[in-house]
Image (cartoon, rainbow, N blue to C red; front, side, top):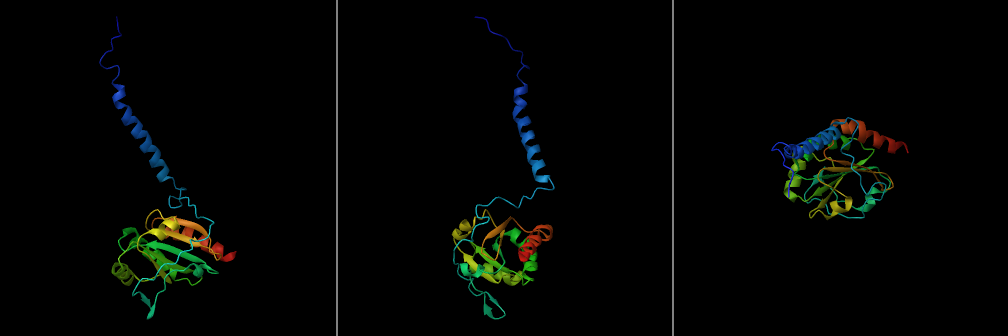
Length: 195
């Protein structure tokens, strides 16, 4: 039986195949992430153009504004009001980064800003809002994360825009930057006010 003899270098290119595949995939992902027109914060959501989840969440104990307790979240609060719903936690570093943008949204009384406090200790959440300022008209506490699942939350922070009929029309994943606030969030809210 005679077999073909291979020289030692004839299959050496196979050793480099995993590296070539890795570099090709890395290049593709880099191009996707750096494309200027791509909005990586706009992930698809099964809840877009659907009513907000019919959930009631208790208020954050001890949180007050102007000496009055800040209420929790109830489904009825979405009727007839344009709403910004922000999912946050005191342990979330990006939540701290986006807080100035949420405060900016709260300065406009044409919409309400609602917080969902995700898997947080009461005292930590309250300290977070006392330190940075409370932008929320109401804060619902989601201790075990089940309400966040109902809202379709991937991670914290996430922000939802809800029309006056209680339907979600936009979802922003990750922290809201100045650019996202100026170029995406505010124009969408303004458009809703016109309709």
